[in-house]
Length: 516
Image (tube, rainbow, N blue to C red):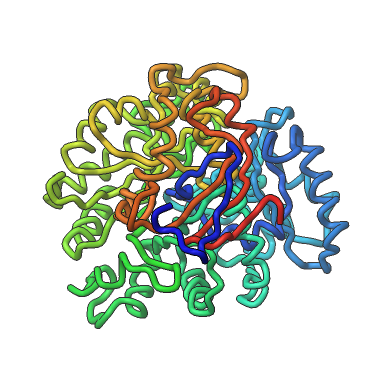
Protein backbone atom coordinates (compact mmCIF):
# COMPACT_ATOMS: atom_id res chain seq x y z
CA UNK A 1 0.00 0.00 0.00
CA UNK A 2 3.00 2.29 0.46
CA UNK A 3 3.40 2.21 -3.32
CA UNK A 4 -0.22 3.17 -4.05
CA UNK A 5 -0.99 6.42 -5.87
CA UNK A 6 -4.21 8.18 -6.80
CA UNK A 7 -4.19 6.15 -10.03
CA UNK A 8 -3.91 2.81 -8.23
CA UNK A 9 -6.94 0.53 -8.42
CA UNK A 10 -7.69 -1.01 -5.02
CA UNK A 11 -9.39 -4.43 -5.17
CA UNK A 12 -11.11 -5.56 -2.00
CA UNK A 13 -10.91 -9.37 -1.85
CA UNK A 14 -13.73 -9.79 0.69
CA UNK A 15 -12.22 -12.95 2.09
CA UNK A 16 -10.99 -14.36 -1.21
CA UNK A 17 -7.32 -15.34 -1.64
CA UNK A 18 -4.65 -13.90 -3.92
CA UNK A 19 -2.10 -16.41 -5.27
CA UNK A 20 0.66 -16.30 -7.86
CA UNK A 21 -0.63 -17.36 -11.26
CA UNK A 22 -0.47 -21.11 -11.88
CA UNK A 23 2.22 -22.41 -14.25
CA UNK A 24 1.47 -25.23 -16.68
CA UNK A 25 4.68 -27.27 -16.39
CA UNK A 26 3.79 -29.66 -19.18
CA UNK A 27 0.93 -29.63 -21.64
CA UNK A 28 0.13 -29.12 -25.29
CA UNK A 29 -1.04 -25.57 -25.87
CA UNK A 30 -1.51 -26.12 -29.61
CA UNK A 31 -4.21 -28.67 -28.86
CA UNK A 32 -6.37 -25.94 -27.33
CA UNK A 33 -7.28 -23.97 -30.52
CA UNK A 34 -8.30 -27.25 -32.14
CA UNK A 35 -9.95 -28.76 -29.08
CA UNK A 36 -12.70 -26.20 -29.17
CA UNK A 37 -13.68 -27.70 -32.57
CA UNK A 38 -13.31 -31.41 -31.70
CA UNK A 39 -15.82 -33.85 -30.18
CA UNK A 40 -15.25 -34.85 -26.56
CA UNK A 41 -15.31 -38.65 -26.19
CA UNK A 42 -13.66 -38.64 -22.76
CA UNK A 43 -14.82 -40.62 -19.76
CA UNK A 44 -16.23 -39.01 -16.67
CA UNK A 45 -15.60 -36.48 -15.15
CA UNK A 46 -14.02 -34.95 -18.28
CA UNK A 47 -16.70 -36.18 -20.66
CA UNK A 48 -19.90 -38.22 -20.74
CA UNK A 49 -18.62 -41.53 -22.13
CA UNK A 50 -19.16 -44.84 -20.32
CA UNK A 51 -19.62 -47.17 -23.32
CA UNK A 52 -18.97 -47.59 -27.03
CA UNK A 53 -22.61 -46.64 -27.64
CA UNK A 54 -21.91 -43.33 -25.85
CA UNK A 55 -18.95 -42.68 -28.16
CA UNK A 56 -21.12 -43.19 -31.23
CA UNK A 57 -23.83 -40.95 -29.76
CA UNK A 58 -21.37 -38.13 -29.01
CA UNK A 59 -19.92 -38.27 -32.53
CA UNK A 60 -23.40 -38.26 -34.04
CA UNK A 61 -24.47 -35.26 -31.95
CA UNK A 62 -21.28 -33.42 -32.94
CA UNK A 63 -21.86 -34.21 -36.62
CA UNK A 64 -25.40 -32.90 -36.40
CA UNK A 65 -24.11 -29.63 -34.93
CA UNK A 66 -21.23 -28.96 -37.32
CA UNK A 67 -22.61 -30.84 -40.38
CA UNK A 68 -19.30 -31.91 -41.94
CA UNK A 69 -19.27 -32.32 -45.71
CA UNK A 70 -18.83 -35.84 -47.10
CA UNK A 71 -15.14 -36.71 -46.91
CA UNK A 72 -14.41 -34.14 -44.18
CA UNK A 73 -12.61 -35.42 -41.09
CA UNK A 74 -14.36 -35.74 -37.74
CA UNK A 75 -11.82 -35.60 -34.91
CA UNK A 76 -12.45 -36.48 -31.29
CA UNK A 77 -10.30 -36.44 -28.15
CA UNK A 78 -10.09 -38.36 -24.90
CA UNK A 79 -10.71 -41.91 -26.17
CA UNK A 80 -9.92 -44.30 -23.30
CA UNK A 81 -10.82 -47.99 -23.39
CA UNK A 82 -10.27 -48.29 -19.64
CA UNK A 83 -13.44 -46.30 -18.86
CA UNK A 84 -15.90 -48.00 -21.22
CA UNK A 85 -18.10 -50.81 -19.93
CA UNK A 86 -17.75 -52.95 -23.06
CA UNK A 87 -14.40 -54.28 -21.81
CA UNK A 88 -12.60 -53.98 -25.15
CA UNK A 89 -11.04 -51.47 -27.52
CA UNK A 90 -13.24 -49.52 -29.89
CA UNK A 91 -13.12 -51.05 -33.40
CA UNK A 92 -13.58 -49.45 -36.78
CA UNK A 93 -16.53 -51.88 -37.12
CA UNK A 94 -18.27 -49.93 -34.33
CA UNK A 95 -17.94 -46.71 -36.33
CA UNK A 96 -18.35 -47.70 -39.99
CA UNK A 97 -22.13 -48.35 -40.03
CA UNK A 98 -22.87 -44.95 -38.49
CA UNK A 99 -20.36 -42.76 -40.33
CA UNK A 100 -19.81 -44.18 -43.82
CA UNK A 101 -19.13 -40.82 -45.49
CA UNK A 102 -16.61 -39.23 -43.13
CA UNK A 103 -13.17 -40.32 -41.98
CA UNK A 104 -13.00 -40.39 -38.19
CA UNK A 105 -10.00 -40.07 -35.88
CA UNK A 106 -10.51 -40.37 -32.13
CA UNK A 107 -7.29 -39.38 -30.38
CA UNK A 108 -6.26 -41.64 -27.52
CA UNK A 109 -6.38 -40.02 -24.09
CA UNK A 110 -2.58 -40.36 -23.88
CA UNK A 111 -2.13 -38.26 -27.07
CA UNK A 112 0.03 -41.17 -28.28
CA UNK A 113 -2.47 -42.89 -30.55
CA UNK A 114 -5.90 -42.94 -32.12
CA UNK A 115 -8.75 -45.08 -33.36
CA UNK A 116 -9.87 -44.61 -36.97
CA UNK A 117 -12.75 -45.91 -39.04
CA UNK A 118 -12.30 -47.61 -42.42
CA UNK A 119 -12.48 -44.33 -44.33
CA UNK A 120 -9.60 -43.02 -42.25
CA UNK A 121 -7.50 -46.12 -42.91
CA UNK A 122 -8.23 -45.84 -46.63
CA UNK A 123 -7.08 -42.22 -46.78
CA UNK A 124 -3.75 -43.06 -45.13
CA UNK A 125 -3.29 -46.32 -47.00
CA UNK A 126 -3.09 -48.48 -43.89
CA UNK A 127 -4.21 -52.07 -44.54
CA UNK A 128 -3.30 -55.71 -44.00
CA UNK A 129 -0.03 -55.26 -45.90
CA UNK A 130 1.13 -52.34 -43.73
CA UNK A 131 3.96 -53.45 -41.41
CA UNK A 132 3.94 -52.35 -37.80
CA UNK A 133 6.81 -49.86 -37.47
CA UNK A 134 9.47 -50.27 -34.81
CA UNK A 135 8.31 -48.49 -31.68
CA UNK A 136 4.68 -48.63 -32.79
CA UNK A 137 1.46 -50.62 -32.43
CA UNK A 138 -1.27 -51.47 -34.96
CA UNK A 139 -4.02 -53.49 -33.29
CA UNK A 140 -5.14 -56.19 -35.73
CA UNK A 141 -8.47 -58.01 -36.10
CA UNK A 142 -8.53 -61.42 -34.43
CA UNK A 143 -7.27 -64.08 -36.83
CA UNK A 144 -6.37 -61.48 -39.44
CA UNK A 145 -3.72 -58.90 -40.30
CA UNK A 146 -6.37 -56.25 -41.00
CA UNK A 147 -6.12 -53.14 -38.77
CA UNK A 148 -8.89 -53.14 -36.21
CA UNK A 149 -8.91 -49.46 -35.28
CA UNK A 150 -6.23 -48.59 -32.70
CA UNK A 151 -2.83 -47.19 -33.71
CA UNK A 152 -0.19 -46.13 -31.17
CA UNK A 153 3.20 -44.39 -31.03
CA UNK A 154 5.29 -44.48 -34.24
CA UNK A 155 2.36 -45.99 -36.13
CA UNK A 156 0.27 -42.97 -35.14
CA UNK A 157 2.74 -40.06 -35.26
CA UNK A 158 3.12 -39.76 -39.07
CA UNK A 159 -0.63 -40.12 -39.55
CA UNK A 160 -1.43 -37.37 -37.07
CA UNK A 161 1.25 -35.16 -38.61
CA UNK A 162 -0.44 -35.52 -42.02
CA UNK A 163 -3.99 -35.02 -40.72
CA UNK A 164 -5.50 -31.95 -42.39
CA UNK A 165 -5.35 -29.18 -39.82
CA UNK A 166 -7.07 -25.82 -39.63
CA UNK A 167 -5.27 -23.00 -41.37
CA UNK A 168 -3.56 -20.23 -39.46
CA UNK A 169 -6.50 -17.87 -39.86
CA UNK A 170 -8.93 -20.41 -38.44
CA UNK A 171 -6.60 -21.15 -35.52
CA UNK A 172 -6.21 -17.45 -34.80
CA UNK A 173 -10.00 -17.14 -34.62
CA UNK A 174 -9.98 -19.83 -31.91
CA UNK A 175 -6.99 -18.47 -29.99
CA UNK A 176 -8.92 -16.36 -27.48
CA UNK A 177 -11.23 -19.25 -26.63
CA UNK A 178 -8.21 -21.53 -26.36
CA UNK A 179 -6.44 -19.20 -23.92
CA UNK A 180 -9.62 -18.87 -21.89
CA UNK A 181 -9.26 -22.58 -21.07
CA UNK A 182 -6.12 -21.57 -19.17
CA UNK A 183 -6.94 -18.20 -17.65
CA UNK A 184 -10.36 -19.36 -16.44
CA UNK A 185 -8.40 -21.80 -14.26
CA UNK A 186 -5.88 -19.22 -13.08
CA UNK A 187 -3.04 -20.35 -15.37
CA UNK A 188 -0.85 -17.51 -16.62
CA UNK A 189 2.01 -19.52 -18.19
CA UNK A 190 1.24 -22.37 -20.61
CA UNK A 191 3.52 -24.92 -22.18
CA UNK A 192 3.55 -26.21 -25.74
CA UNK A 193 5.25 -29.46 -24.89
CA UNK A 194 6.14 -30.99 -28.28
CA UNK A 195 6.23 -28.27 -30.90
CA UNK A 196 6.33 -29.16 -34.58
CA UNK A 197 7.70 -26.63 -37.07
CA UNK A 198 4.26 -25.50 -38.41
CA UNK A 199 3.03 -25.00 -34.83
CA UNK A 200 6.05 -22.89 -33.97
CA UNK A 201 5.47 -20.78 -37.07
CA UNK A 202 1.88 -20.22 -35.91
CA UNK A 203 2.98 -19.31 -32.38
CA UNK A 204 5.56 -16.85 -33.71
CA UNK A 205 2.87 -15.20 -35.83
CA UNK A 206 0.47 -15.04 -32.87
CA UNK A 207 3.20 -13.49 -30.73
CA UNK A 208 4.22 -10.98 -33.40
CA UNK A 209 0.57 -9.91 -33.71
CA UNK A 210 0.34 -9.54 -29.88
CA UNK A 211 -2.39 -12.16 -29.63
CA UNK A 212 -0.90 -14.02 -26.65
CA UNK A 213 -2.46 -12.87 -23.39
CA UNK A 214 -0.48 -15.43 -21.38
CA UNK A 215 3.13 -16.61 -21.65
CA UNK A 216 3.70 -19.68 -23.83
CA UNK A 217 6.78 -21.84 -23.30
CA UNK A 218 7.58 -23.89 -26.40
CA UNK A 219 9.63 -27.10 -26.52
CA UNK A 220 10.54 -27.92 -30.14
CA UNK A 221 10.26 -31.66 -30.83
CA UNK A 222 13.63 -33.27 -31.47
CA UNK A 223 12.35 -34.92 -34.66
CA UNK A 224 11.71 -31.47 -36.15
CA UNK A 225 14.84 -29.94 -34.71
CA UNK A 226 17.16 -29.84 -37.74
CA UNK A 227 14.59 -27.87 -39.75
CA UNK A 228 13.79 -25.61 -36.80
CA UNK A 229 17.42 -24.88 -36.03
CA UNK A 230 18.11 -24.11 -39.68
CA UNK A 231 15.44 -21.39 -39.60
CA UNK A 232 15.40 -20.06 -36.05
CA UNK A 233 18.89 -20.55 -34.55
CA UNK A 234 21.69 -18.20 -35.57
CA UNK A 235 24.21 -19.13 -38.25
CA UNK A 236 23.28 -22.77 -38.77
CA UNK A 237 26.05 -24.52 -40.73
CA UNK A 238 25.86 -28.22 -39.81
CA UNK A 239 23.85 -31.22 -40.86
CA UNK A 240 21.22 -33.07 -38.83
CA UNK A 241 22.04 -32.88 -35.11
CA UNK A 242 25.27 -31.00 -35.76
CA UNK A 243 24.25 -27.91 -33.89
CA UNK A 244 26.07 -24.60 -34.09
CA UNK A 245 27.83 -23.17 -31.07
CA UNK A 246 25.23 -20.38 -31.03
CA UNK A 247 22.23 -22.74 -30.74
CA UNK A 248 21.51 -21.78 -27.12
CA UNK A 249 20.92 -18.16 -28.17
CA UNK A 250 17.56 -19.24 -29.60
CA UNK A 251 16.38 -20.35 -26.15
CA UNK A 252 15.43 -18.85 -22.82
CA UNK A 253 14.15 -15.39 -23.80
CA UNK A 254 10.57 -14.23 -24.24
CA UNK A 255 9.49 -12.26 -27.27
CA UNK A 256 5.92 -11.01 -27.09
CA UNK A 257 5.09 -13.72 -24.49
CA UNK A 258 6.60 -16.62 -26.46
CA UNK A 259 9.90 -18.32 -25.72
CA UNK A 260 11.71 -21.49 -26.65
CA UNK A 261 12.92 -23.17 -23.47
CA UNK A 262 14.51 -26.46 -24.52
CA UNK A 263 14.21 -29.52 -26.72
CA UNK A 264 11.56 -32.24 -26.28
CA UNK A 265 12.83 -35.82 -26.61
CA UNK A 266 10.24 -38.64 -26.31
CA UNK A 267 11.61 -42.01 -25.15
CA UNK A 268 8.53 -44.17 -24.62
CA UNK A 269 4.75 -44.11 -24.75
CA UNK A 270 1.99 -44.12 -22.15
CA UNK A 271 1.39 -46.53 -19.26
CA UNK A 272 -2.38 -46.48 -19.72
CA UNK A 273 -1.85 -47.42 -23.38
CA UNK A 274 0.68 -50.11 -22.38
CA UNK A 275 3.32 -48.48 -24.58
CA UNK A 276 5.62 -47.21 -21.83
CA UNK A 277 8.97 -48.98 -21.32
CA UNK A 278 9.42 -50.89 -18.05
CA UNK A 279 12.19 -53.10 -16.66
CA UNK A 280 9.66 -55.67 -15.39
CA UNK A 281 6.79 -57.26 -17.34
CA UNK A 282 3.20 -56.19 -16.85
CA UNK A 283 0.98 -58.55 -14.88
CA UNK A 284 -1.74 -58.36 -17.54
CA UNK A 285 0.32 -58.89 -20.70
CA UNK A 286 0.65 -56.61 -23.70
CA UNK A 287 -2.02 -54.78 -25.72
CA UNK A 288 -2.28 -57.75 -28.10
CA UNK A 289 -2.04 -60.37 -25.36
CA UNK A 290 1.75 -60.69 -25.44
CA UNK A 291 3.29 -62.57 -22.50
CA UNK A 292 6.28 -61.22 -20.54
CA UNK A 293 5.49 -57.81 -22.02
CA UNK A 294 7.37 -54.76 -20.70
CA UNK A 295 6.63 -52.20 -23.42
CA UNK A 296 9.25 -50.72 -25.69
CA UNK A 297 11.37 -47.60 -26.30
CA UNK A 298 10.70 -45.24 -29.18
CA UNK A 299 14.42 -45.04 -29.91
CA UNK A 300 17.30 -47.34 -28.87
CA UNK A 301 19.86 -46.07 -26.33
CA UNK A 302 22.62 -45.88 -28.95
CA UNK A 303 20.53 -43.29 -30.80
CA UNK A 304 19.53 -41.33 -27.70
CA UNK A 305 22.95 -40.94 -26.08
CA UNK A 306 24.71 -38.95 -28.86
CA UNK A 307 21.68 -36.69 -29.31
CA UNK A 308 21.63 -35.92 -25.59
CA UNK A 309 25.38 -35.30 -25.62
CA UNK A 310 25.04 -32.84 -28.51
CA UNK A 311 22.36 -30.77 -26.77
CA UNK A 312 24.29 -30.81 -23.50
CA UNK A 313 27.42 -29.65 -25.33
CA UNK A 314 25.50 -26.75 -26.91
CA UNK A 315 23.86 -25.67 -23.65
CA UNK A 316 20.25 -26.55 -24.51
CA UNK A 317 17.96 -27.70 -21.68
CA UNK A 318 16.46 -31.18 -22.13
CA UNK A 319 12.79 -32.03 -21.60
CA UNK A 320 12.56 -35.81 -21.91
CA UNK A 321 9.32 -37.79 -21.99
CA UNK A 322 9.80 -40.98 -19.94
CA UNK A 323 7.02 -42.91 -18.19
CA UNK A 324 8.47 -46.35 -17.48
CA UNK A 325 11.55 -47.02 -15.37
CA UNK A 326 13.45 -48.54 -18.33
CA UNK A 327 12.96 -45.30 -20.28
CA UNK A 328 14.04 -43.31 -17.22
CA UNK A 329 17.19 -45.46 -17.06
CA UNK A 330 17.93 -44.48 -20.66
CA UNK A 331 17.94 -40.75 -19.98
CA UNK A 332 19.85 -41.11 -16.71
CA UNK A 333 22.54 -43.11 -18.51
CA UNK A 334 22.71 -40.60 -21.37
CA UNK A 335 23.03 -37.59 -19.06
CA UNK A 336 25.68 -39.35 -16.98
CA UNK A 337 27.61 -40.21 -20.15
CA UNK A 338 27.45 -36.54 -21.19
CA UNK A 339 29.33 -35.63 -18.01
CA UNK A 340 26.55 -33.63 -16.35
CA UNK A 341 26.47 -33.11 -12.56
CA UNK A 342 24.13 -31.22 -10.25
CA UNK A 343 26.73 -28.43 -10.03
CA UNK A 344 26.04 -27.60 -13.69
CA UNK A 345 22.50 -26.43 -12.74
CA UNK A 346 21.08 -27.52 -16.11
CA UNK A 347 17.71 -28.56 -14.61
CA UNK A 348 17.14 -31.19 -17.29
CA UNK A 349 13.51 -32.21 -16.87
CA UNK A 350 12.06 -35.71 -17.13
CA UNK A 351 8.42 -35.23 -18.06
CA UNK A 352 6.05 -37.63 -16.26
CA UNK A 353 8.75 -39.60 -14.35
CA UNK A 354 5.98 -41.98 -13.41
CA UNK A 355 7.02 -45.58 -12.82
CA UNK A 356 10.21 -44.74 -10.97
CA UNK A 357 12.47 -46.67 -8.63
CA UNK A 358 14.04 -45.08 -5.52
CA UNK A 359 17.54 -45.43 -6.97
CA UNK A 360 16.50 -43.31 -9.94
CA UNK A 361 15.58 -40.44 -7.63
CA UNK A 362 19.07 -40.71 -6.15
CA UNK A 363 20.47 -40.35 -9.67
CA UNK A 364 18.25 -37.31 -10.30
CA UNK A 365 19.72 -35.65 -7.22
CA UNK A 366 23.30 -36.42 -8.28
CA UNK A 367 22.78 -35.19 -11.84
CA UNK A 368 20.63 -32.15 -11.06
CA UNK A 369 17.65 -33.60 -12.95
CA UNK A 370 14.12 -32.48 -12.14
CA UNK A 371 10.86 -34.38 -12.62
CA UNK A 372 7.60 -32.92 -13.86
CA UNK A 373 5.21 -35.31 -12.16
CA UNK A 374 1.71 -36.30 -13.30
CA UNK A 375 -0.19 -37.14 -10.10
CA UNK A 376 -3.56 -36.98 -11.88
CA UNK A 377 -2.72 -40.48 -13.13
CA UNK A 378 -3.48 -41.74 -9.64
CA UNK A 379 -7.09 -40.67 -10.13
CA UNK A 380 -7.70 -41.32 -13.80
CA UNK A 381 -5.69 -44.56 -14.21
CA UNK A 382 -4.56 -45.58 -10.73
CA UNK A 383 -6.81 -48.64 -10.63
CA UNK A 384 -5.55 -49.68 -14.07
CA UNK A 385 -1.93 -49.24 -13.00
CA UNK A 386 -2.48 -51.47 -9.95
CA UNK A 387 -3.96 -54.16 -12.19
CA UNK A 388 -1.11 -53.86 -14.69
CA UNK A 389 1.87 -53.54 -12.35
CA UNK A 390 0.75 -54.44 -8.83
CA UNK A 391 0.24 -52.11 -5.84
CA UNK A 392 3.94 -51.58 -5.01
CA UNK A 393 5.01 -50.37 -8.46
CA UNK A 394 1.80 -48.40 -8.98
CA UNK A 395 2.17 -46.82 -5.54
CA UNK A 396 5.52 -45.26 -6.50
CA UNK A 397 4.17 -43.45 -9.57
CA UNK A 398 4.94 -39.72 -9.45
CA UNK A 399 6.68 -40.16 -6.06
CA UNK A 400 6.49 -36.60 -4.76
CA UNK A 401 7.19 -37.38 -1.11
CA UNK A 402 10.29 -39.43 -1.91
CA UNK A 403 11.58 -36.70 -4.23
CA UNK A 404 11.05 -34.05 -1.55
CA UNK A 405 12.98 -36.17 0.99
CA UNK A 406 15.98 -36.07 -1.36
CA UNK A 407 15.80 -32.30 -1.82
CA UNK A 408 14.66 -32.61 -5.44
CA UNK A 409 12.51 -29.77 -6.76
CA UNK A 410 9.62 -30.86 -8.98
CA UNK A 411 6.53 -29.61 -10.74
CA UNK A 412 3.12 -31.19 -11.38
CA UNK A 413 1.21 -31.11 -14.64
CA UNK A 414 -2.00 -32.10 -16.38
CA UNK A 415 -0.53 -32.95 -19.82
CA UNK A 416 -3.52 -31.03 -21.19
CA UNK A 417 -5.46 -32.19 -23.12
CA UNK A 418 -4.73 -35.68 -21.74
CA UNK A 419 -6.43 -34.54 -18.52
CA UNK A 420 -8.25 -31.26 -17.87
CA UNK A 421 -6.47 -27.95 -17.32
CA UNK A 422 -7.39 -27.84 -13.63
CA UNK A 423 -4.61 -26.90 -11.15
CA UNK A 424 -6.84 -27.42 -8.12
CA UNK A 425 -7.64 -30.99 -9.21
CA UNK A 426 -3.89 -31.47 -9.64
CA UNK A 427 -3.34 -30.30 -6.04
CA UNK A 428 -6.08 -32.64 -4.89
CA UNK A 429 -4.49 -35.63 -6.61
CA UNK A 430 -1.05 -34.87 -5.12
CA UNK A 431 -2.55 -34.69 -1.64
CA UNK A 432 -4.97 -37.64 -1.79
CA UNK A 433 -3.67 -39.94 -4.58
CA UNK A 434 -7.20 -41.33 -4.68
CA UNK A 435 -8.32 -43.35 -7.70
CA UNK A 436 -11.70 -43.44 -9.42
CA UNK A 437 -12.66 -46.39 -7.20
CA UNK A 438 -11.58 -44.53 -4.04
CA UNK A 439 -8.41 -46.57 -3.49
CA UNK A 440 -5.31 -44.66 -2.36
CA UNK A 441 -2.45 -45.29 -4.79
CA UNK A 442 0.76 -44.97 -2.79
CA UNK A 443 -0.35 -43.57 0.56
CA UNK A 444 3.24 -42.76 1.58
CA UNK A 445 3.68 -40.51 -1.48
CA UNK A 446 0.89 -38.09 -0.53
CA UNK A 447 2.08 -34.55 0.20
CA UNK A 448 0.77 -31.54 2.12
CA UNK A 449 -1.04 -28.59 0.54
CA UNK A 450 1.97 -26.27 0.43
CA UNK A 451 4.13 -28.85 -1.36
CA UNK A 452 1.31 -29.45 -3.84
CA UNK A 453 0.92 -25.70 -4.40
CA UNK A 454 4.66 -25.12 -4.86
CA UNK A 455 4.65 -27.71 -7.67
CA UNK A 456 2.20 -25.46 -9.57
CA UNK A 457 3.91 -22.14 -8.80
CA UNK A 458 7.43 -21.41 -7.52
CA UNK A 459 8.94 -24.84 -8.23
CA UNK A 460 7.35 -24.93 -11.68
CA UNK A 461 8.87 -21.48 -12.30
CA UNK A 462 12.28 -22.70 -11.09
CA UNK A 463 12.12 -25.62 -13.53
CA UNK A 464 12.12 -23.21 -16.48
CA UNK A 465 14.59 -20.73 -14.91
CA UNK A 466 11.85 -18.18 -14.11
CA UNK A 467 11.92 -18.23 -10.31
CA UNK A 468 13.06 -14.59 -10.30
CA UNK A 469 9.98 -13.56 -12.32
CA UNK A 470 7.13 -15.85 -11.32
CA UNK A 471 5.81 -18.35 -8.84
CA UNK A 472 5.46 -16.19 -5.73
CA UNK A 473 4.19 -12.73 -4.81
CA UNK A 474 7.27 -10.58 -4.16
CA UNK A 475 8.68 -7.18 -5.14
CA UNK A 476 10.22 -7.19 -8.59
CA UNK A 477 8.26 -10.17 -9.91
CA UNK A 478 5.59 -10.09 -12.60
CA UNK A 479 2.08 -9.35 -11.37
CA UNK A 480 0.75 -12.72 -12.55
CA UNK A 481 -2.06 -13.48 -10.11
CA UNK A 482 -5.13 -15.61 -9.58
CA UNK A 483 -7.86 -14.82 -7.07
CA UNK A 484 -9.64 -17.86 -5.60
CA UNK A 485 -12.81 -17.69 -3.54
CA UNK A 486 -11.07 -19.48 -0.65
CA UNK A 487 -7.56 -20.26 0.53
CA UNK A 488 -6.42 -23.65 -0.83
CA UNK A 489 -4.04 -24.02 2.12
CA UNK A 490 -6.87 -23.76 4.64
CA UNK A 491 -9.53 -26.11 3.27
CA UNK A 492 -9.83 -29.88 3.34
CA UNK A 493 -8.31 -31.62 0.33
CA UNK A 494 -11.70 -32.64 -1.09
CA UNK A 495 -12.89 -29.01 -0.92
CA UNK A 496 -10.19 -28.06 -3.45
CA UNK A 497 -12.40 -29.46 -6.20
CA UNK A 498 -15.08 -26.90 -5.32
CA UNK A 499 -12.86 -23.79 -5.19
CA UNK A 500 -13.66 -21.19 -7.83
CA UNK A 501 -11.46 -18.79 -9.77
CA UNK A 502 -12.75 -15.24 -9.38
CA UNK A 503 -10.24 -13.38 -11.55
CA UNK A 504 -6.89 -13.89 -13.30
CA UNK A 505 -4.28 -11.19 -13.93
CA UNK A 506 -1.33 -11.25 -16.33
CA UNK A 507 1.31 -8.62 -15.58
CA UNK A 508 -1.22 -6.58 -13.66
CA UNK A 509 -3.94 -6.66 -16.32
CA UNK A 510 -7.15 -8.63 -15.82
CA UNK A 511 -7.34 -11.35 -18.49
CA UNK A 512 -10.35 -13.24 -17.14
CA UNK A 513 -13.09 -12.53 -14.62
CA UNK A 514 -15.95 -14.67 -13.41
CA UNK A 515 -18.17 -11.59 -13.44
CA UNK A 516 -17.27 -10.60 -17.01
